[in-house]
Image (cartoon, rainbow, N blue to C red; front, side, top):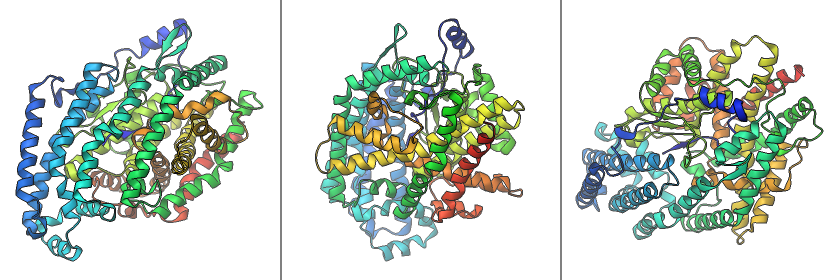
Length: 612
């Protein structure tokens, strides 16, 4: 699974004219990934050969095992799972290559055709193995437990546990096959339309047509008029296309409602909670804790920021504005690399050594390019290969933090790969642990060596804003999704109604320091998480609060914390959050857990308030 990062905070500011040219020069020679470790181009003959082999293997697998799983011995069932894993990894390599190729050339029609063709053919192959999970879920619990007592099968207990989590929501075999095969022409097609539309949008500003990544970047420019122009341009173009975005959103929400009803999920968010292996009450406790903390966190901080900016009310384009004393220097790629790896090494040399592999090999794609996906992500690909990182690096502190974040994902994926294809993947909530921890290590390292009070203030403000974006804003966006999906069950929503829900939930989290202009109602439209992975966003808040609590333990821990941390990453998807956090004395079901995490943000705000 691709691990997405936040596309919701503009990366950093750029400058016009000569300053812009200097910035471009200072962030020149950025690394680009080499996908040859997967395949040597979209016309590589190995692609068709691997698809053909996967199809043959899947058909042979079906002939060997369909209708027999309940009668297999423990050893026989273990052999079947291993054969299934080999097929899934082969398909995973193919889809990973297609996704990564598409990510840097979203508007290229040949690449788009290749991407769609691979997805369709992989879906066809996957149909032959679909019976496997369905039959596993029909095995009697007591009979399966007896088989699991055999060491030959015991290794697969975590994977079987996770597969059987969805047993109550499983449909008939024919319906499951139908939904599986229709995905590429249904949800998959609408998602592709969204991606291609966003990538093709151009925003007229300063005499040229900018990409979404470039215009979002200007929302954190030091010049307020430039920020305003960028915000207005973004709002206008999104508004001009809002009917299409509303159609995509309504269609996908209805599609989800229909499938949720057939699968008996009680609420729109229920499936996401189950996929994250989180209890509903844990998620509800997180939401309640963050919403209750709005006044102490975002409302309080933005009042302080408005005073610093000399404003009675801030506009939406002021949210990520740098402070008046902010350092505008451009951070070269080499400095960013050394900063992040140095921070990782101070915690664990082994962690840094793993991270260094991404820079020593062509595993990172960092430059801005026309047609490239905005934002950033880490893609694990398959254990027999290695992860890749996508960035849009522009040389600001936030870009360094994004590098630290995505490298954390990448390191986690490398360390967990030893578990194998079926056991390496972690739920989204835990997937954010290493990334946010990497950010915190980097921030603390940079803050520790900064002696200038004004620059420390700017660094603290930047970190607070990142944490508010990660915790408060992500929960607000999840609340927006909940409102949207709940109302969609009563009929299609107009673009205006969707915009009103966005303004309502954003106003609640941002607080009275903001006045939101009319075009801000369209800003929900460019956010891919709502389309690709509904309710994904609360995983960021979970991960940030978890890491804040984890870091508090680290600060007061004796020797051995780093070893426990590395073991947690190496566990991949074999353990649930309760088991992973137990060695650190943490429990996400305890309300004090969330209070501890949110308290870190509150202490940062209190510290910066004294600098005012």
